[in-house]
Image (tube, rainbow, N blue to C red; front, side, top):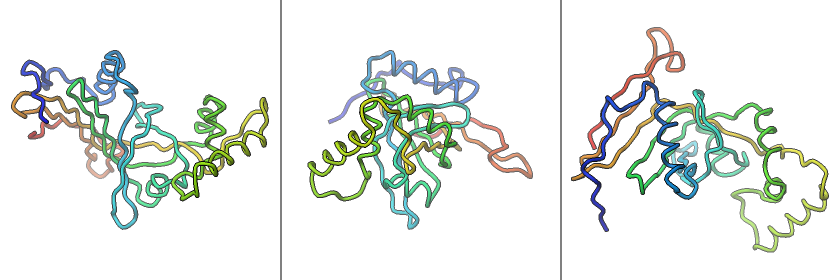
Length: 216
């Protein structure tokens, strides 16, 4: 099972935007325009305090110069790991475009007001689902989950605003590296990485970005 990538496709330093955010916005727009199902789907990798990794696919809900945001129950596996070992990786697998974006950086909870604003925008069924599910915990069967959902629906009724669950919220990955990967013929892929470097006497957070080409 092997696909050969088109020789004419490529990503050169001259093609690259001046900053990772602009470059990501370009490729994200391409993915959305291409008709890919859920172009905002990304694989989130975390690790527990002992360094044991886990991964799952979630949906990107916002991005800006500060980083990439998704939402989850903080008691879920990814939520617990993110708070215990605050580093994560993200992979956007845009296979039909022969592209992927790989992000690595620190992960942190977003401001509660941002979480509540997003939760209020969710469909009512999704809001009830957040209350009904003790995410990542063992449950006896499907019937128990559906009973929990019915309980939440009865609790909040049909029209009353549903508050944000206390253990549910947003997480932001603040990138330290953002790699843009473009498939090329003969497995000689283009890999251009923005990497944040620390200013002398400072930290990576107040540094600047450099671009590096990586061997495929």
